[in-house]
Length: 471
Ligand SMILES: *Cc1c(COP(=O)(O)O)cnc(C)c1O
Image (cartoon, rainbow, N blue to C red):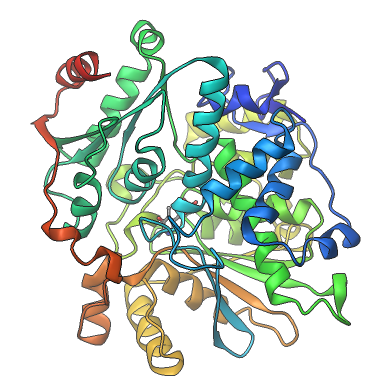
């Protein structure tokens, strides 16, 4: 399996090479040259597998430059009860007739980003070890991604992590989670600024090519293909768990509802569907930042400026420019890299592009439908799920459940992806039901642990100096 770029100007590369890169050299995103197809028999043969075994099968289709036995070892280490609270790794939780949660938040940081990051940590260490190489991960976070990366990369050989976060702007829980890590290869820098300024410093240091190569700077952001591939696994898992496998067999379809921001999670669903997994609908849910909902409704893609991006109570979806969207558009336009380049040129010139002529295809050919959920919807949904199913869900998951409700059909199981646990966003839980969400037992003493963080002014030169001294 070799990888190409959505902009068409990259030599074919094996997985291990694109693993360590961010954007492709032509500014595009890496994709498999062609997708593996999974037939009904193969699918049935996977039914008895445990999660790490299924992960080795699915990832083995995308990763052909790592021996299968090594890959199995990596998935066993990634998806282990040392890191995941559920012995199933990804449990299904029934909510109501036809609607269940796919529990993607049992990992160390209580959010679905752990699903991909735990594997990324293992495969990074493996590839770096083989190459006798090292890497410096530089990132910026407003909460979820940074902590998932740190928990996955802590203590890993050949990897140091420098994570910039906005000083005083994360929740107590998020701060305690990140800053209590004492591993020597993890460096938390709290900058006296906002998230966008942290992000700008990452961009400025990464575009300094001399610095980048001297310190082997790398990224773990959501465009990394290994993250997308690792997420494909749980669509297969969800389908296998939601279908009986007896009489209905392979014809049985399942729909998935996905709370979306950067289009990473639902892109993995699209990949699974293109591989032949019987997915009926991919239901894309946004919050008030509805750029993607608008696209699937109208065919016009019109990203907003930072100033027009609202701060909402599902903050991990407050995104105005979906960084993985280009991979889906590549498929939409018949994998025509020239057309992708034209569209992104148009986007730069006019701030939007228009594929409304293809809009009927979005559902008919690709299964995509979309909907918006607001703050009031989140509170209502959290309340009603709590009342009717006795389960507490987080605000992002509530967005998915709200939008999914309109698309539940008899005979087609609907799985709403649970992308975080409520303890992480307890303020909104208090607003909805009048009391906080319970904190999982193993995290209860988190707040009292000593914290290790370097506070500094928001200045790229200070960050650069710090990396020079500590990498
Ligand atoms: C990152 C995140 C999302 C959005 O996922 P994308 O892959 O960016 O679409 C949704 N919910 C939570 C809790 C997240 O952390």
